Length: 577
Image (cartoon, rainbow, N blue to C red):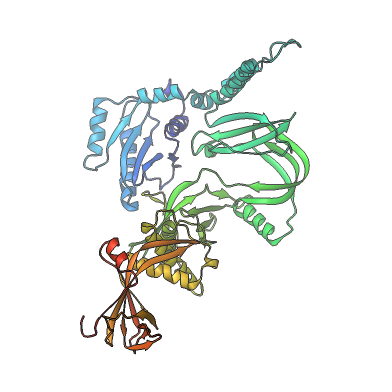
């Protein structure tokens, strides 16, 4: 590749895209005063980041190049220290192979940093260019060869240059070869997107059924001649839509008929927030892939969120910068306002999928509005839900919120919270939900089936208290409650001498979502002071005096011994410990 013939900006753009093709999860950092000496950031695991610093240099290293590389290195060190991130490797990428002196100079620059560093030179960059020729064509050949090759291959695949005899019977193998040629032609030359075509008999009711391919950024279904065909456009790497947005001209008429639809439209226009199932009629539509239609009434329109959410985490820091809360998040790609204003919205949810977070960012006055909603925890994994609820409850007034990828630098920082995130009348119910999730998380250790949070509106208070008590007991602590009476039968050889301690062994059982679970055995211990006989065979009722405490503890010993003692009443004098 004659890299020296091209502009520096094009060189850096091409190399960055090839790095992203090598590492589809990578993120290109747009040049800014705060880029931290990073061009492409590649996450490999939590707290492990690989950094590619891309330089346009095609000539031997000189003082000017050294100054630029040194500046990038110092910026990286300052950035990693300030944001508490760890870098697993730092690569300086340029289209010229390093000399021995280059390696020695870079080793001296990065000595004692603990960050492995190296050059990536012409040999590797040329190999990338060979692996991704469509990237080179797209940037350096003005895309002309892309159009010509695609058209020529499509014509050959469709056999458009020859006539087909009327008596010719189309064989499946021939049709499959044509389809392969079409798909190969589409995928050969586009550096940003892959394409998938599929076809099958249409449903009997002629209603289209769409199943987007994993990673699809656009899908379209067409039914014609009793055949349903689908096109999926799939991003080759996460930032493809930023590098080349898909062209789309969709003109619809929406008549908001409810407050909910009106609010959805305000959110969409003001922040680009997706909406679903809004009644509309189509005026015209020019969509990716050459699809177009017009004048369609009684349709519903949805603008869906990206199906490539990314892991992030919300961190809460107190006045002294101590980390008080961490909430793992799954965030969608930020959306932009559609009304010409410089506003963004960034939405997502926690990993338990019970908490929805939303950041509304106004780039004009540099303000960020933070919103959290907790729709319903029913059906959630109690362990994950407990972590999310606990994190939100820890975000008190004065906490500063930062959001970043796991182990990475923050990409968004908020001013201190003006008040507790969970407060006022909502706090008691919130804490009740948190206690139930913590209890179910503890009980899961004794139950082989996966527990989910039941529909809480159907849970009686007595049942929820039973879960909390069982969890405390399972963790090895005692539960103190009260008692009022205990029915027992004295045999002829043993008489109860009052007052006395009474201990009974019972099963520890809980009912969760209609199923009963046996968690082991417990001892119930109390102090009895009164006896009321109920029959001539030794039956009667024990009752307490002023001390009506009932102490519950997990029964020690083997299951066989506890089973043998099940329901038996043991007494001892009150003066014994």
